[in-house]
Length: 255
Image 1 (tube, rainbow, N blue to C red):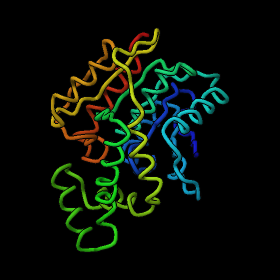
Image 2: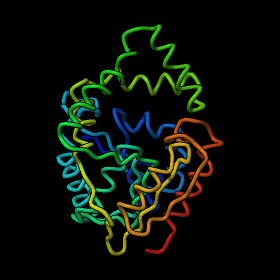
Image 3: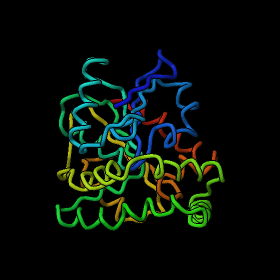
């Protein structure tokens, strides 16, 4: 595991938790500087995605390591944590388990998919090879680059950086991450006193995800944005600026 602290050390603490098959450098690279102007950032790279020879074990084992770091380094309390996509599962578990405390849990347009073991196994067998299928062929890389640019308004550099994640990390880590995320469930109506839950809702994902946010958490604050899944992180400043403003407002909400 890798925990890098940076940014404004006098500011509120904000942990950044990346999504599937990503390190924080890729996932949050376009907004790190801006977030660091105001917040004391704790940037996390999970086992298997931290540049070491380790393999990602499972979501709950990694959650325990994150909790241990927060207890040892910050006396068990952070002002906030934001999860990108799969990283939101860690935010949910940190809130649910109550081994540490977050004043603000920020969910970055997650899907919050949950399933049983057989379905999770079948999905991982299907999806993970697709995620990595383009890495060995320049023709496939070019095709994927154009799809990403079209769907998410990425530029070439961002698309290449994002695709690079799927080629530099081991398949076993990606498979374990994807599979165990589906098995890491949230109960309905999660509520923890003095924790505010905030969602960045990417409207173009569809209303079923909005309904999930309301199902799993009691009275969450939901901000709607006309964008695709996590487009604020790699689609340019026109997407990032309003979400960054919302994050500032989330972090100032009384708990």
